[in-house]
Amino acid sequence: MFNKTGKFFLLFMSLSLIFFIASSTIFIASCTRNPSVTAKQAGKDDSVNEIDLNGKQLIEVVAKSGGYYPKSIDAKASVPSMLRIKSENAYSCERAFVIPQIRVRAILPINGITDIEIGTFDAGTRLIGTCSMGMYSFVINFN
Ligand SMILES: [Cu+2]
Image (cartoon, rainbow, N blue to C red; front, side, top):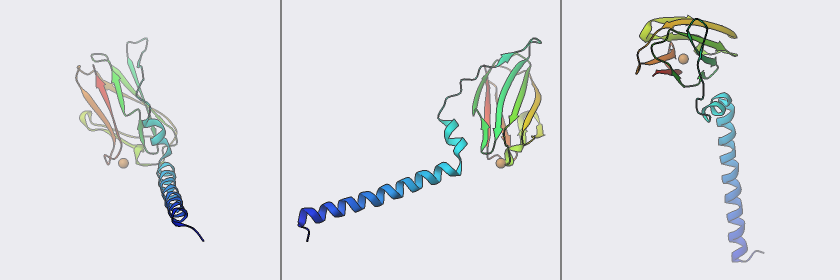
């Protein structure tokens, strides 16, 4: 029924179709597993920390299922700082929050704000906030 070229074309088309279905299935699976992570990781951190009237620096991070965002925050050194964690549908272990270097421990709400006075740091300090299991983390770089 088909000539040689026809058979080859048919084989090529079926292989392409199988490949297409397989790759889109993998893509869809990887997206649905953790939509917030893929969406956020694309953008680079552009957060600018506010210095409020009392001279305190406000460092904001969002806690949601899948981790803390942004993953990397630049902050000013030698300024008293407050870490404000905004929980947004945080249903996972990101609620068990720790900063081991300064012995901070907090159970975050599912939704809401948690303010933590973290103190003043020297330039070059890297402060790491993480879930208590160490799965999710973010870093504050003081400069
Ligand atoms: Cu965890």
